[in-house]
Length: 256
Ligand code: MF3
Ligand code: CO
Image 1 (cartoon, helix red, strand yellow):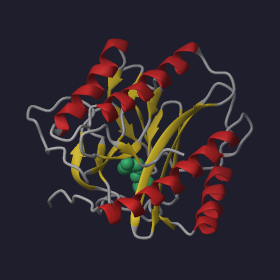
Image 2 (tube, protein in one colour):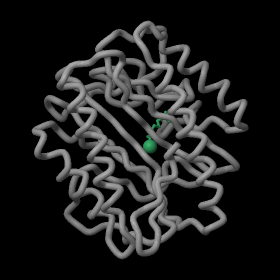
Image 3 (cartoon, protein in one colour):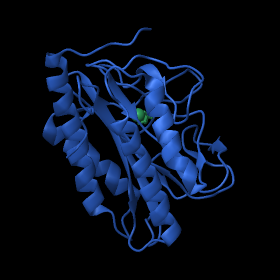
Image 4 (tube, protein in one colour):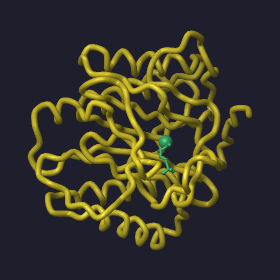
C-alpha cells in the first residue's frame, strides 16, 4: 500500500472533517468536570455527529480479526489508561486526567485528533506530563516540512520528550489519514533507522505522541481494546491531523 497524496479539493474536504473533530473535542473539553459520567461523553458525540452530518469512524472499527469491533465513537482513557479506552459507566474524579480521542468521517474523509484534559485540580506531575506530551506533538508538527522526511517528525517528537525523563511508548503511533482512518505511513514517536517517507505537499498525517511517567511498557485490557501502562503509571496522549504544504509548516486540520 502506497502513500496517497491529497489534491487541493480533497484537502478542502479534509479541513471540514478536521473541523468537526476539533469543535466536538472543544465542546467535550468544556464538559469535563468531576462528577461527569463517561457514558455522557459517548452520548454527546453521537448527538453531535448527527447534528453535524458526520459519520462514525471508530464505531465497529476492527484493525485485525483478533480485535472485536470497537464499540464506541470515541476513546476515553483515564489516568493509567493510555489509548483506546472504551467508554463505560464511570464517574470522573477530581485529579484524574482523561484522554479524549475522536475520529469522524465527513463527506468521505476522516479527521482524527486527541486531547488530554485535567479533571478539576490535578497534581503538578500530571500537569507537567500533559505539557510535555502536547509540546512533543507541536515539535513534531513544526518538523513536518516539505522536502524533508518522515524521520524529521519522529526525531523531533523523541527529542521533545527525552529531557523530561518520561518514557516514549513504542508499538503505537500515528498514521496517514484520508478516506481511511489508517493509511500509510505509520508514524513512530521515536527516531527510525532510515529517513522514511519523503514529506511532500498533500501528505496528510495524524501525529500522536504517547508518553508514560514510568516504564514504557503497556498492556491490553480484557475488553480487547483499552491499553494501559503495565506499571500503572500515569500516561498521556495528544493527536492532530496535519497536511504537509509547500515552503511552510504544515496546516493543522484539527484546530477548532
Ligand atoms: N486515533 C486512534 C488511532 O488512530 C484511535 C482509533 S482506535 C478505534 O488509532 F478503534 F477506536 F477506532
Ligand atoms: Co489516530
